[in-house]
Length: 317
Image (tube, rainbow, N blue to C red):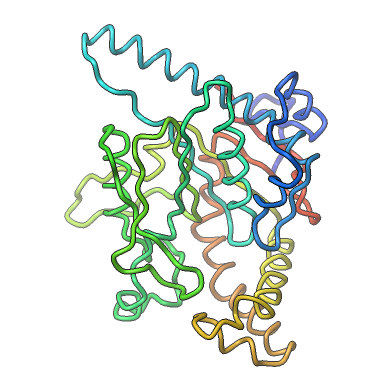
């Protein structure tokens, strides 16, 4: 990521880790070491120091944004003379496969839900809005699973529209990483939270030209704040392969796992398979669809090889 600060042309203000950590000020730590360990996603790393230096300052910043939005809502309600119920503040979190989106989403949910006013914070992933495998196979899209065209965008947009309209409750479909498919008939209920976190690969992706020139909003149009988790391609490939190899020794051993066949292959064959999946699917998706959305984020968290966030880029107001 180009770090232009002095020329004033970049839309972002770039912070070193030390500079960003200083923005925590007196924000209290509300998580224990045990809770932090539980929030860590598979094959990711999360330390108390990371929470203190990166996520507590971000929690403090978000408290300002959410507070300002609530004041604006109350002012608009007085202006309009209505008694509309407040709508959730929506935070989008995007980035590549294996970059650690789930960890960031879980940590923010935990921290934000422990603010003094104890807001209700819900979290959903866009995995549940993937088209079922049967549909992907019929449409020849199984090799593009995770690409924008593999999602039921219409259902996702309807879900976000109902959330922003203050409907209650609103249901989202559920995805199983074990069977690698949407679970028929299962859903998770979102009942008018104060804050909703939406995590997924392509949450910042602009929609492609709609059929019959029908005007369609972007998923990100519903976001009040967005975060992009960033890392070099070579680092992401390493993390992806490491995760695949670990899953081969754990989840893939379950006979119900979609990837169960890889549990019995040799280590070299598994490594070659992971490399191929990364090169021919995930890297293509990253370059064509995910990375181009980075400049649309409100905040960019850039990670180094050890999974720690090294720099923070905050979009200027």
